[in-house]
Structure formats: C-alpha cells, structure tokens
Image 1: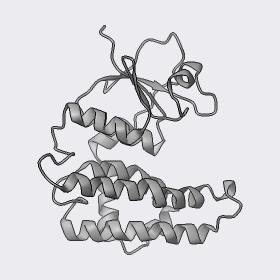
Image 2: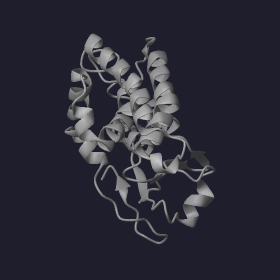
Image 3: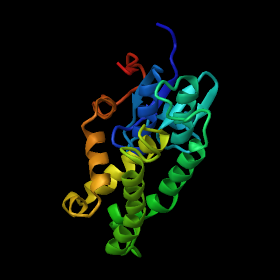
Image 4: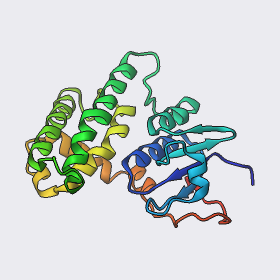
Length: 216
C-alpha cells in the first residue's frame, strides 16, 4: 500500500470537520488517525506543534492549521471551485472565515463552555455571536443558497461546522430566531452526503493499528 498523508483528527471538532470536508471534496486520500483529546497519542504530540487537531503530516511537512489543510487539499484539486479561481471572491471568503475564527469563535466558546470562563455572561455571549449569524443570514438571503452566491465556496464549509456547534448549544433557541436563510443553509448541510461522510465514526487510533483511509 502506498504511503498517504496522515491526518490526525477528532470527529466532533469543527476545525477537523472542515479539514475533512475539503479533503473529501478534493478527492485526496489520507490515513485518518482519530485522537482522543483527553489522552493524546505520543505520536500525535510529536507531530503537532500546537498539540491540536486537525494536523496533517505529508512527507516531512506538517500542516497544523485547519484552514491551511483546506487550502492544501483544494490547491491540489478543486472540482467544485471552492477557491473561486480567477475572481475576487476568495478574498471575501477568507475575510468571512477570519471573522468566524476570531470574534465569533471567541463568543461561541464563552457561550458553549461558559463554566470554563468565570467572567462570561452566557446571554451576552450568545447575543454577541448572533450578530455574526445575522450577518451570515443577510448574505445568504441576498446572494442565494450560499454565502458568496449560487455556488458553495470555501467560506461555507469552513464556517458551517461552527454554526452547527453554536446551534446545538441550545437548538430550541437557535431554531426560534428569525434567520430563515441561515436555518435552511444549516439544515441542508446537516442532511448532505459530504457532511454524513465526514461524520462517520472512527475507532481511536493506537500505534500499530492497520491504516484507515479517508475517504474510505
């Protein structure tokens, strides 16, 4: 069997979800190693400078950020043009992703994991996160089914796992909000074949296990 790039992953982590989505759509094949976060494998800790998932090892190179893994995969093959080659949409997509990964993710963590942040006001963090979600809803309402128009881009699949995590913190509250376009966007994602493919369950990886390839 030829050697494949190795992806250290954790099924529920939104950063890992978006990395797997890009690997899937690009048609790349990796050896997936499911990590248990409370008991990280020594081989993973030796590979990942940040000790966080996802982490991709390709030959001697290590790609330790989820967005960089997405770009790594899509720059090799981008059949659905998530990177919007030849246009200015990639800059707009990356700007949206930065807003997600920065302020929105901070509010999401302080909302979902408020017990870890003694100074967090859960209602305040939820409302602060809702500002970004309203912005996404407006973009979806204006541009069609996706954030940057009638076709999906890297922005959609980089951001959707975090919107899903925010929604599942209190799904009743989330579903009651006046975000019709956002709700449809998330619902379509959660029912899609790519989402179901990247959310299958993998056994915890241990050194010596037979390689598990993704996509299978």
